[in-house]
Length: 309
Image 1 (cartoon, rainbow, N blue to C red):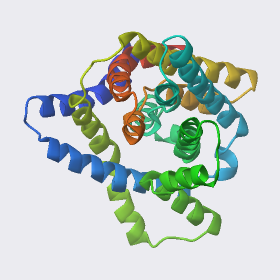
Image 2: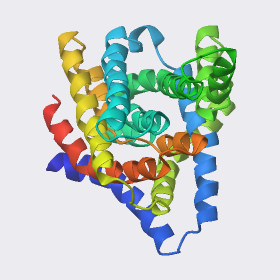
Image 3: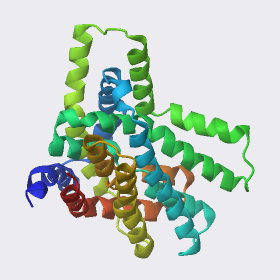
């Protein structure tokens, strides 16, 4: 119960403030759009840039961490896609979108915020190692499979171009890539530039999670709730369960195991809805899954925290 009060509720109260502010008309949808654009295109890329630039890559990029997390992530995509197709009778394009909902954890807005509150800022190195390959991995799989499905199984140069364009026009990936360049090159940034980045970083998570609440206020809970609950089960239970089991089997140290499991236990992010909107498929299911899973994360994250050492 103490973890629920001290770690989880403060984060979700900020999300709730954003939700109520938009729902009651105290904060306009245009304001939410501007805040979201600021956080997603500027503040969070600055956060990821500074984190990667300052990261001890040799220590943080433990293959056991990435195998544990991304095996669970990939299993979620496969279960979501084939479950949607064969258990719920959705067509293949809808099924890829639903699989993407089970693939893409909200690793930044929720994962970073909850891990920091639970274990402190020093525990975030493993989170940043996961985040460094999260968008490329998830968008790479989602877009590749969707384009193959739409091309009736025939992938080609056009598919590769679409994947690369979608990935490298993403501000988060640009921030991560720039961070790697600085890290590998050993360049020392001027102090005044670092101070400016730190100011942006301090605004990133509060602005982002308040804006997330505003975005959720525009979603409507509708569609096939059976498939929504199925996607929530995979995202909030199956993915972290696989991650924890592999972490234990591979003797992953306690600190990265915490980060991996807690990140895996996060609801699908708004990127799941963005992906659905890109293709105009299963948008109601994606929006409802994000909304319902985010609410359920209040309880499921509490349960997973109680299982972590």
